[in-house]
Figure 1 (spheres, rainbow, N blue to C red):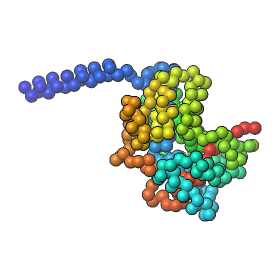
Figure 2: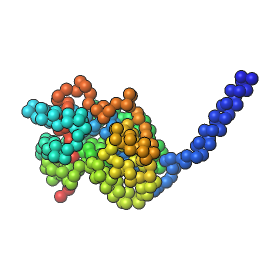
Figure 3: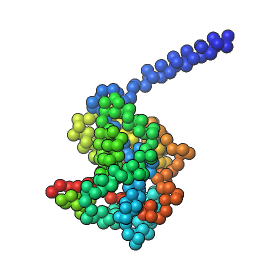
Figure 4: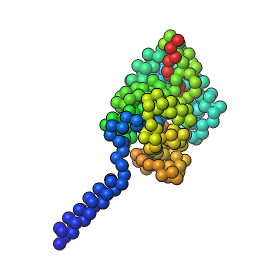
Length: 287
């Protein structure tokens, strides 16, 4: 009797699972050429901020002088711990950081980016988010990173993960040398949505069939563009917004850590300084 009951329970469970799968259409849809996926980077694809890890690498390579440390440490602490994005404060940090790479060659920063990925970033990729991206690739869809991080850094990460490409913040260069100026604004908040919309138009995508993934409420404009928005490791505001709109949520963090997950406690002032100093946009404008 016990065996029969167990078999019957298993049969019913299997039948119910089949019924649920029938109700939920397969996603991503295999072979849908009008669909693609857009992934935020920091705390979505990778633990912490790409800029922070890149900054650690730059500091290790003596891109910063001692007098810069306190200033950059304060700015990094303000953004990462307070979570405040005051436009005037952000502009000051960007100007300071851009001055660090001014005069350096684009090729130099690209090469360093490859090294820093291996040193600090590879082991911090979230396996769960990586699996989501791979599902889109396996379905024959293109997958892009969309981030405020320097486009060169984003491209390195996208290439290492086998993704289609990356949209990132663009910095100006002349004859292969950084000028210390941005081309436009950082790819942040509404700017991400604009970039995704432009890319979708160029690629002939149907945004209602596309997916977007992010941890931050700042990316609600991008998430709202697509038919399949996902909140990944969401901050408090995004979690509330996602629940209200019945968006899908995934949380791969242990103990649901806050956005501060990106700053190791033992990193020290130098590493924190490097994080802010790496708040740069590193793409070339060919003239």
